[in-house]
Image 1 (cartoon, rainbow, N blue to C red):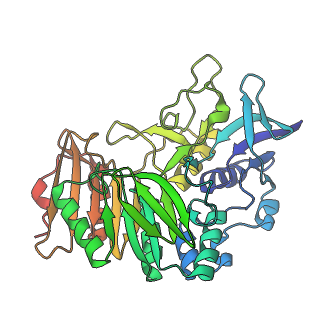
Image 2: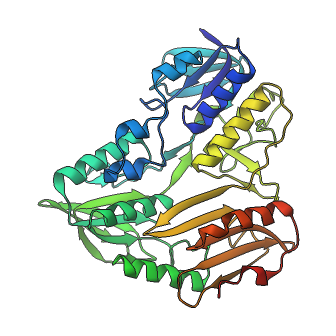
Image 3: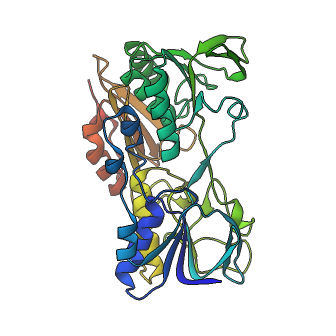
Length: 403
């Protein structure tokens, strides 16, 4: 039995941020991190740049054993949690048992199982972990493929397309949705994206998905449900994540993530509650601006929720309150996602674009108040949008005119 005051499941940015926050507040505490991956904390934000050769591995790695030893944080790599006994406060991982006084679940997400992946491990790729990025980097350097097929419609799909554009690889996108980002955009926004795809010479196949994959000499032949045949050298699967908390055994209240309150304290279904927190991708919190429960899986949000959980675990009563935001380059066009952006969650939404087709914005409202925005080519407006969401004021639509 390994005993700890603070036990953290997940060594990503949320778990590491929490551990280091706890150490600053509690100099004598026994702290441990259980991490399923083999590596110490690394920057997932920099993985695409690592694949492209723009940064080396030393830049990607953010912590070493020296950092954990200095902070007196025990780090257990390749430690997969299988079960938690919340009553006894025991965590079972492999053949070890860890006991805790306070527990943080910051286990992030795991890739969805894709039945086509197992048959072609050397030609079907993901981009979720450092191991994934290293595999892809080595393949691109070794094979120098001419054609790539990206499957999916989210941010990982964008990163794959950015990488293939960097290497001059002819790329097709296959998405089951009618449009890319169908839940975010309107027709005007879809036209804006079509121009971006066209400028980058990326062919889009929408309202379709993979039916089967076969190998033909050195190529892959992808047959879609709609009957299209696509020959490619590589398939990049950007099909999303599942939140990773199966080990909780149905004891916690969950939706897409673990329900938490404003202090990141987890909700229990029964009377076992207390002494368990969640942060990062694993946490589903109530956004104070939209009033909606949401999960938000990006680096900054992981850091902030991990820090908030660490404060709460050491006695702080400061509620978590932040406008979640994310930025990415979409084939050379800067994109900012701010707050709650979903056509189905907002009471109303409107958009605007400039006449030259260089800027587009879609704005989401509840009760006349701004709760989120998606900006294409207008990232400089991000601070202004965040302030307007934080203000909670009724907005004038004309303030967002790009024309």
